[in-house]
Length: 368
Length: 148
Image 1 (cartoon, each protein chain N blue to C red):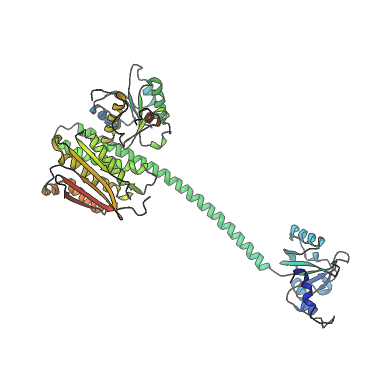
Image 2 (cartoon, each protein chain N blue to C red):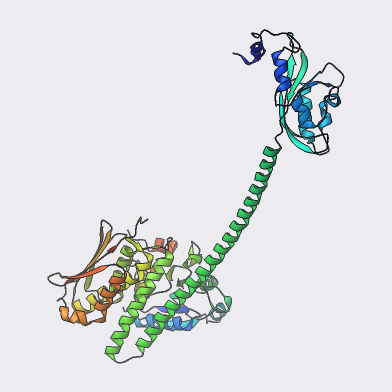
């Protein structure tokens, strides 16, 4: 059924005018406040109001009939909303607004006003029909909600600014600490090197040199850590490759060839120092023990991974070290202890000729 | 190494300057002079003929290694300039005319390898050994020493 034919809905009801008219009875008795105005009279006065309307506004019927609806407005009624209602009457269209109205006793209520023109057969507007509803609670609740929302938003904004400032401060602090660590590591290395130069005892020099290599290995770990974009993970694969090339290159031992098959392999940054030191021990041990007195040979490094474990294997083709001698050296005990710390495992096997050391360790989950 | 490089060391941390000097000399090269700030570099005699300068980025008296690098390029345009710094990220993309960087904390092996590599590049360019991981060359040096 088409909307404009809605008035036909009442056609099928046989009724008499006056007391027996069921529609008039319904309008009179409904709990919804209603009025009818007559635009053909000067100032469009109210010609009908029901009991609910009288209850809502506090006025008696006699005080209402003959007056324009604007008598419900007061100083805080919104002018733009009133203009909207006025425009709807002028253009003879429906209007649906929330308007602050005043009761007879001066108290206010939020009025959900719905007003529509009533046309005769020729389409001329004969009446305006208006229903009201007290929606004070809804409007006030909305106001409270929007006030609270604004409060919360302001608080969130403030806290976000605080957090951002705290983060900035933390970042500056982190850079400062990082800078100091770098400088101190550099100075420790330099101090040790200067000391080594002043010692004549070859045994002592060798020990200090080992110490120096360890400090240098830590320095390289730290440098690689701070230069990568992700400070929580560490590429032990490229570290192993760089360390091997660096140490063999700087040893001046051109007769040691290096064969490297490495791929990027990410570990937790917390384990970087331990694994870095382990690799340094294996590497420097190989150069010292497998190729003593300028003996030539080939050193091979493989970095692979199987499932969730990383595997680094370093093999020399030297004479091999007797296991008794191995267990006594600080290097071996460093490797074993540090391996335990990094949840890694170190295994020595024979390479006939030479020795292989295989380190297996947990890879970082979801490595980038 | 039969060829010895003439090297300048611009570093305000005396320990590091001594250490770098030792590594340069141990590698068979010669340290011409050391300076801790821009003023000391200005005071160096014109008669020097450095082939390589190691320059820290943060120098004494709040002077900058970038300014020192510019001055060296003016006074000794043939010299290679290598920054030694913990602030690699503060070096502009074109290295402000300098030729490379060694990041701190450096290792003995890393510096010695870089010295050998640079010496080869100076006396018998381009270097045939591969560039050590401790040394990063500037784009224009990489171009100059590009080998196919």
